Length: 105
Image (cartoon, rainbow, N blue to C red; front, side, top):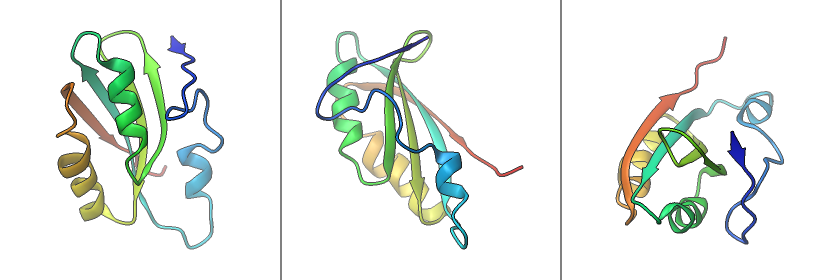
């Protein structure tokens, strides 16, 4: 279940999905879905901080094992690793992340 959370920092629904971005001609980008578990009571604050990071395209509050889902993209694999390890993981309130790289079929 996806919860709509309206805040200046978090879009409730995507304007474009990662799949839309990958359809641009000549566009080769690394794409991933990041599942984020936040500390109790920190989900909205963490979502707002995640949304501010360059390369994060959409952020959702969700229910289940994880609290937040982020759609991210970067120019290449090395930039994606830097985004995940150097930008996302150090955010206060993040307890755990699970990054799933998207591969074209």
